[in-house]
Every structure is written in structure tokens, then in C-alpha cells.
Amino acid sequence: MADERSNIIQVTPFLGVRDLQASLDFYTGILGFGAYAVGGGYAYLERERAGIRLLELNAMGEREVHVLTCYFDVHDVDAEHARLADALATLPTGRWKGPVDQPYNQRELIVQDPDGHIITFGQGIGPNVGQWDYRDPPS
Image (cartoon, rainbow, N blue to C red; front, side):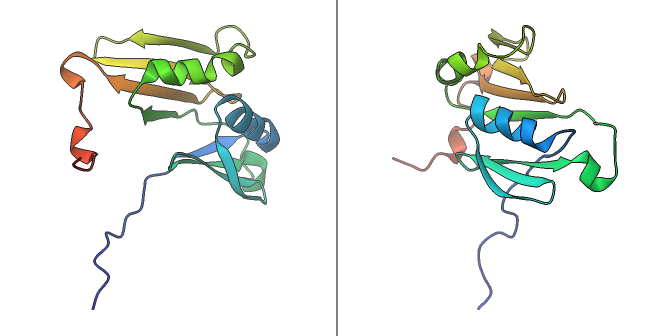
């Protein structure tokens, strides 16, 4: 009998970084990700089953960072901000903002990593409230 599970597990952004250790320190120390499979200029990071992959550019022979934005949908962006507030306060001025209500009906906390990648935590507001309810198992 064939395996009935879907084949796709998740989408994982792959971020090129200049200094893997500095990026690991940021993602684990500031944003609270766990680091897994670290080695060879590579790291897989995960928090609450949401992952990011880092690859040190020198390991690929590349030098230019192509800045990406990663969006993490959360149930409560204000709670996320409260959880990260002390760590965010250690970042240089201008490296984070929010939570802020956006005109596209999302409330967002926006953080910039050491290479300029934008990490956004957001939740739906207004007509977007409950936009992910279809994923929650029935009570």
C-alpha cells in the first residue's frame, strides 16, 4: 500500500549569510530558534516547527548577500513582541520595529538580521482575523 501522507513537508527559506556564527547567535539568541544540523558552513534552525536554513556565502564561493524576507504567521504578534522585547532591545537602533498595523490588514513585528534579511512576525487583523483558522484541528 502506498504511503498516504503528502510528500511536501514544509517550505524552508534558504538565507545566504556572511558570517554563520554571527547569524546563529542572532537567530538563537535574539529570536529564540534552535540550531540543528550545523556544519560545513550550513545550519538548519527551527522554532515551533517553522524552519530557516542558513548557508555561509564563502562555503558556496559567493560574496553577495541577496536579501530575502521571511514571514512567520503567528496567533498573537503582541505576545511575540513581549517574548522578544528584552533581546530586541540589545539590537542597534533601526533594526526592528513594531508591532505595527499595516494597511493590508496585518499586524507585524519586523526584525532585520545581521545580513539585512527581514524577518517578520505577523497576524491578521480586520478582515484577515482568523485567516488560518481552517488549519486548526476541531475542538
